[in-house]
Length: 155
Image (cartoon, rainbow, N blue to C red):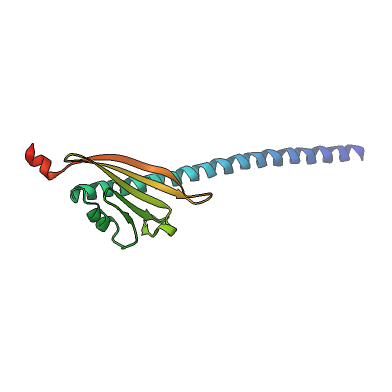
């Protein structure tokens, strides 16, 4: 009778060790899959940010540096954007649709500087984090240079 009890105890300890090993492996796999999901989400955001920045650059080029024209082209839904002489900010929701600032998860910012007849543009797409404060994490940024028509005529 003592021999049977010893085999049962050994079998139960073996099962506990096997279950513990499987639990550790499962925890590692969940951690790896969670990280992969996060990386995939970042890649999708980067791809969308690149497309938005390219659209902004092409629109800026087509409108000759006129930010009002860029705003009309990119902000077809008519939401409020921030438009100044040398700055344009358009807000996007989590699905990359143009939205108002309170609902925004991302922002497109175009800053212009002028050097004679040359227009320099700096395009930045930011992720807006409202966890603690309104922090901005840059998702994509690019530089563009546009020579105005008047300068081309002189050249």
